[in-house]
Image 1: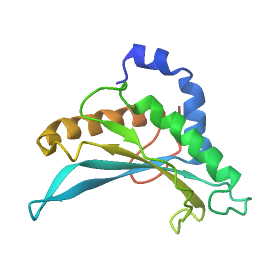
Image 2 (image 1 turned 90 degrees about the vertical axis):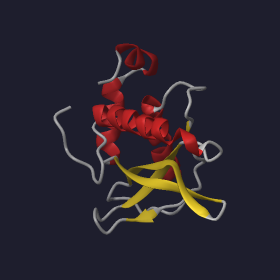
Image 3 (image 1 turned 120 degrees about the vertical axis):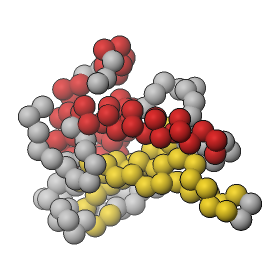
Length: 154
């Protein structure tokens, strides 16, 4: 569950849930692996938050609608991120303007990546995994689920 002070600090939960519905937001998670001394070591995860273009649009990479969708995804992600300075680190990677074709949904999608964990501190993996669970829980509170958008009763 999301602490009450977190809801107060971020603002309008109903508005964020509407953004989730509007963009059919969902998430995916990939392990983040770095090579250290010739060995591959998992140091955290990348959580991708996806938002879909409307069907009636003719999207192009970095179009104004892509940028607007990304800004809405930033608002959704900001709700889930811990306050600045919390360790292990979690941050939003810069938007690169890419647009992805989705065979699954028949809509083009924009992504936002949250990087969790610090490659400079692979010993913090347990804390990074705990933070990933917390971020996912906060996103689920808004109606963002793993693997695909689900209509909800929010």
